[in-house]
Image 1 (cartoon, rainbow, N blue to C red):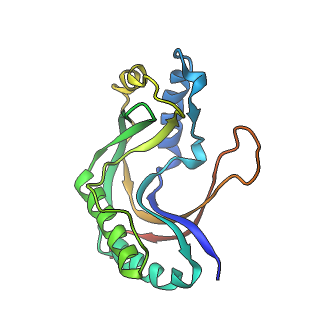
Image 2: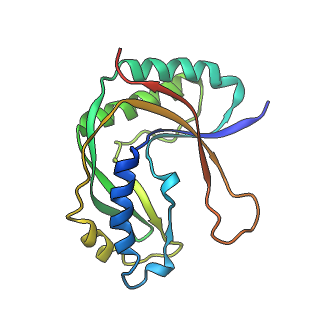
Length: 190
């Protein structure tokens, strides 16, 4: 059996991606921006649970459990909002709206994976973020966070949970990014 590198996510709609893209374009003119590795818009998502390498034999049960998690969660409002950083290594856009429901959906996705038999990292409180840049070394990301402080995206209704495959770059092409492919999705609510 082969395995797939998977995560469970909420994918922002095209309008939200376009709005954030405009804000990120402005960040690219800040000093030091050329040293950051900027994520591409096709990879913008809110990861709810990173599953890692999953044996394909587990997919039917995972599908069933994630469908149940989605159906038990009603659609909810969300918007991209502000930004933050994880130390000097990752720059992200934040979220606002029904964050309690987003956290609940993340907990349900994590539980679905665990009950399927997927080894998950230690459980910690979900922190909603959409990664927009990374640094190989510690970088001063404060000017970028400050530039994003007033960013407010248009609200949308989250109506779907997605299982996404991450296809890592295979060979030495400078700047090549992972490719993401939605392998399954489920509507929220009954």
